[in-house]
Length: 113
Image 1 (tube, rainbow, N blue to C red):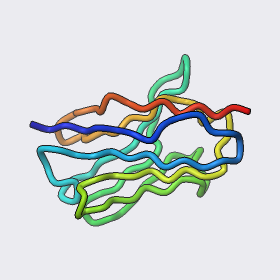
Image 2: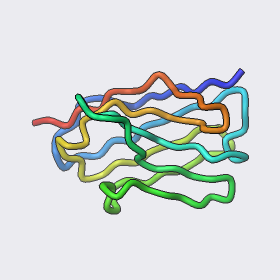
Image 3: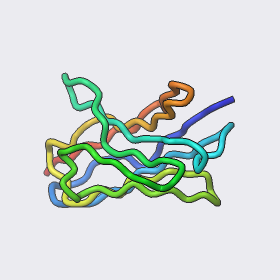
Image 4: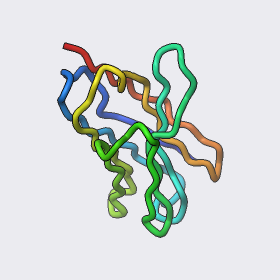
């Protein structure tokens, strides 16, 4: 059974950093494309970053080099390292496995002073 469990969200000040984790169960992360999405308040869900089986990465235009998606194959876990956060990054962040159209439960990130 496919399952994605996110963690690591919280409150952070503008300019701060945060790392999100997404533990995968029921499949091997390194064999499929998986991604982070986010949904800001009152807005549609949007792609943040994705990584394929080959390790090739893609990012949303708004990332502008601030975020990095990584994968730990030994832990079967996906990470999103976020730096230089701004209030515009406030959102619920989701892990997504398109092969199964499966979404994690999400983790809230709030950027505020």
